[in-house]
Structures are given as C-alpha cells and as structure tokens.
Image (cartoon, rainbow, N blue to C red; front, side, top):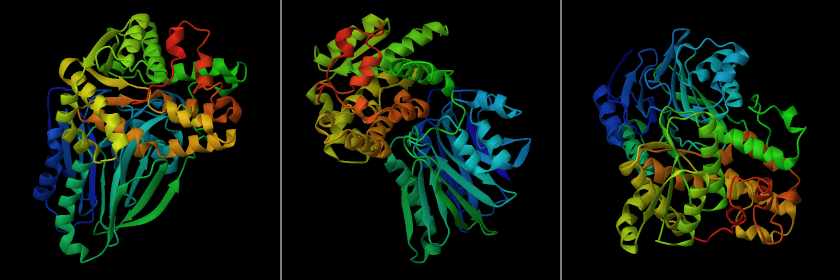
Length: 494
C-alpha cells in the first residue's frame, strides 16, 4: 500500500471522495492526473492512495476541516480494524452518543470514525440505520474483498456512481465541489482510460440514490460485482437510531411544544464545528426561524463570536427590509448584499456551470444564493452556513398546497417533494454554496424533526385560512423568538 498527498495550512475549503476499481491499465501517474483535476477546489489537505491488497484500485480525498482539524485526514484507518479504509463526506451528529451506547473505543475526535466501528459491529446496514447526520461514504473491506457505498436519507451530501457491465466501478462525491460538471469531467478521464477495456460494454453514470446502500464484491483483478442494493429508509419513517430527544419526552407535551423542542434540537446539533457559523437570512419564515434559534443557542453554549446573518436582494426590497428587522430583533451581525441586473448577467454563466442545469426555475432561484455565497467567502470568515431549505417541502409551504383536493393528497405531495429534494432545492443550495467552499447545514431536514412532523394528522399540516405552513407558524406564535409580522409573513415569489 502506498499513498501520497499534501497538507496545507488550515483554510476553509471543500472536501470530496473519489474511488476507482477495476482498471487494469491505470497507473499512479494517470490516476494522480485525474485526481488533481479537482485539486483547484482548494482542500485543506489531499491524499491519493493505492492499496496492494485490493488490486487495480485507487482512492482519493480532498478535505475541508470542520471537526478535529488535526486527525481527520482520510482514507481513515484504525489500529483496531487495519483491513478497513473509509472515505466519508459527512457530518455525524450522534457520534458521541454512539460511543456511549456501544462502548466504542475511539482513536480520534473525528465524527465519521463511528462508521468504522458500526461496520465492524454489524455490517453496512448497521451503519446507515444508526447514523444521525448527513453523509456519503465509501468503505473498503480488504479482508473480505468488498466495497460498500451509502448516502444519507435526503441526499444532502451528493454522491455519483459509474458502473460498467464489465465490472468497473467509479464513485465520486462533491459535497463542497464546484459542480456536477467537475465530477463528470473526472469520470470522463476514467472513461478515456477505460475505453479499451469496455470494448463497447455499456455503463451507467448517475447520482447515487439517497436512503440507499450498495455492496460490491471485488475479485482478484479489482472487478466489482454488485451483491446488494437496498433502500434502508422511507421518508416519514421513524429513524432507527436513539434520538437526541427521547420519544417518551414527546408524549408528555403538546404538538406545538414538540415542534419547538425538535427544531431547536436540530439546530443545536448543527452547531458542532471548529469553524465560524453563520446563517442565510431571507426574511421569510424558514430562514428567520433557523437564524433566531442559532443566535439563541450560540449564546447559551457560549460560542466565542457573534453569529453572522446574510441577506441579498435589490436595495429596499421587501426581503431585505424583513431580514433587517429579523437581524435587529435577534441581535446578529448582519450583512446585506445588493445586486443589479448587470450582476445577474455577469454571474449567469458561472451559475449555469455550477448548477449543471438550464432549468429556468432552478437557475432563477440560484443566482441570488450564488452571489451571496461569493460575498460570504470573500468578505467574512463564516464557513458553516445554516439555512431554511426543506421547510417548504416538509411543512407545505408552496402556495399550491392551498388547492390540494384533500389532506391525503397534500401529504402525498410532501413526501414526493422530500424524496426528490436532492434533485432540485437541495441541488441548488449545495451547488451555489459549495462553489465557494461553504458547508451548508439544513435543520428542517433533520430525521427526528421531519419524521415527527410528517407523523402529525394530515389535516393539521395543511394551509389554514389561506396561510401556508400554518402549523409551523403556530408552534412559535406564543414566543418572542420572532416579530409577529415576520412569523406570519407570506412567502414571497421569486
């Protein structure tokens, strides 16, 4: 086994995972050439590794340091399990609870270490069912000749898979990368190397499905055979892991109290970072709730800095005015970015490049977020960014929910939107922030919070009196968290 890499001064950049199996013609020079095509993404450190125990394989890692900046380098290997190698792009919020629950002997302070312990204790399904967080991982078991891949339930962390009928497997993750195009360019290099070996054989290059894991057998030449593909989670299902808020505690309180408790707990989990935390703030309900809870909790846990909030729009637009009012109310360090039609025109090519789609709705909703992310990167030191993505899908925030034929139809539509969120709003949010090496965290897509919300009676989650997200608003109506007019402000069209 040999590896080579570089460690830099700790800068706030993106991380990504990269693996290739089954190419007998690849060399260290070719693989390094392919891997360094994504080096411009600016990692804190990088490594590319060849393991002689798994013939014709190569794995690589670009790193953004968020937790355990010193010992979180990958591929991760532990003295306890020398035959396992882990690449993971993720944040695991219950890593400490898992250590206590299963008496794991951690060797680092890196949150993803728990994945190796869970696998050793019960296999890949034991991993995905016990993780509370967002993740995309590749785990190689050299002793058994297996490679396992998995992705979080909502697909918050991107993962792409190339698989040919001749058994060549390529996997690449772009949680903080420039765009899907970079991943495709990386795979296009693989294809140029694979051309003589494929001999006309077909291959598939597609997003790895959220809520799934896959296991492959690796033969003596590195050729991969799919052994199992399984969906381990259905949207709305109660998660299998022990939650941060015990379910018995929820039985003692009202629905609105539980909504407040669980959303607060979701935000608190996402304050785990060694980098400065900020919030996107549009002045709408979703981002305002997240920002207000973040500021409140940051004071309670004594974070050594003031939470920054970021708004963008035309000068004196309704969103800018509303966001300004929220920031003054919660006491954040507020930043406003104004843009013109010329700014949009100049950014459009870059936005299209990063999104890798020309869908007008997605592009239109992405330009502002792209410009705001650029400002955050260039003008502040915030790296971990919380936002309100997922609330419209979960809490029936889109205006057309008012016209749903029945509560059941509205519920079914919520499930559909959440299942596909990684293709639309999730893609937009990830691509525009990751273009500038920011890590986005989305409290509304917390598994315990979302599963509880979806378990409530269907009729209570519908718009009431023409007001969308009525239940969510009502849950915070008797608190001072937000001004009343912000709490009941209608969604602005974009």
